[in-house]
Image: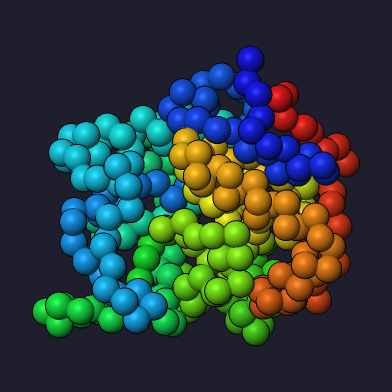
Length: 291
């Protein structure tokens, strides 16, 4: 029987400690949306530049590069497991760089998903390239795909248009990397900014929707989801990061801090203008996890 590592008092944020390959087959709950930031397999003993210092690019054993066949099987297997947890009208978002995103796209196609967009996240404050032999790396990519080619999916077009100043939102998003206030409990080496994940959540879910992150890390997906009245299940195998996730969610129990965080994220402020916040769902029922 599954046991939660942490569940928030309002039951809108649940953490499981373990490997998603082992835990996902153990329950039948279906989600409205999945966001995944899988290993990019970049830990090759190289160096980078961060906050004025030269640092190693190594993230951990989970990010060490394997063979091409290993990476293909890895992506196919975790995406297949996630597909079983997605509602028929659900969508999945998967982030990456050129190192892994093409393999991810191939796996999605092989498994029957329809790719809807490839978002280019253009970082407004990228670190410099210290080798001076390449263009500065300043983008990451996020594939958005739906489960079935001919089933309609959730897309809050009018809200995205409102956030974009009354114009259709494009697939290029110019957003900064994480801010210091997002690291108040510590930092994950591949942590995504709340502004990025919040836009994803707002674009493709409704208040009350359930969101899964199989590689939760520091649970930015869950913090973003809760800030806009969505519900979250995160799976993380590293003890250090599952504890970091718990501490980040505990911060949100401070109402004033929650309000402050919401004010810092532009898309949340604009979404409140468009539609007042409130926990609800289409059929009026808030479903809960079985553990």
